[in-house]
Image 1 (cartoon, one colour):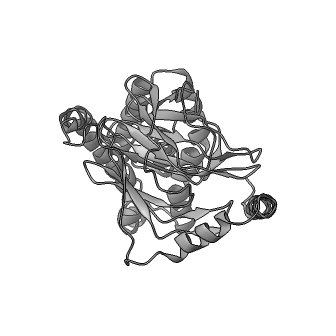
Image 2: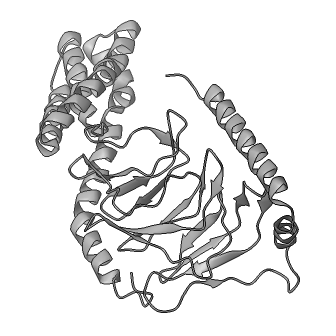
Length: 331
């Protein structure tokens, strides 16, 4: 994206195209959550008019969730194998008919049947497809392009860093893998921002052995292609930092270097166009920061000491990942 923001027109056009669909889906989900609870509002009147006991009323209130929960798995299977538009349309039609019929039934049995059908119809509202979905991971990044979600990088279930990703389109409920050609090297704890035309990935860390990065890549979702970011005047390698997109440039700040065990209060500004190279942001005071002093001291140490630091940093990171895996909830 040019630093003058000239590509924002494409972003606005994408928003105009997807906006009406997003509004319609949001309205449907609002109805989805409202009509499932309408029976509880009318419960006192139903008990008197239809002669329903308290236990029968409890069954009616719970019946919706019986089919709604069970059919989540079936709906997910359907959207993976058939056109999501037809699956959603069929579900919306079924729950609309069930809602209308609920108002004209006059007995417990038929009312129970309508509540069960309502759960089936509304179960299509939330499942996402898994066909071609990106493998499970943590410490990855996610950006929204106004029409797709892009997931990239992170640590997979085998505790290996990856440089794979995927684009999820909610309007078609479909996944497309991101290209590996010229993609940044595997990493986690990096940052990613969406410029309106590209995703910029920067920084992060690889393990093991521990390697911190001040490199990155620009991903173009339209062409499914990567372009490496410049390293001229780039900030010192780091992970667990922050990054934002201002509308014309990316600003990265803070973070931690695992190889040198140093925290940073410095950063940089990156503009994704040819011409000026990235510039460092000034530190908070004219004097050198503690992070810069520590880097300078460690740079003067012997290569043996540096190897020792790298070794202990790698051991620490592996221990942290093991603890996270042990604490993760089991499903």
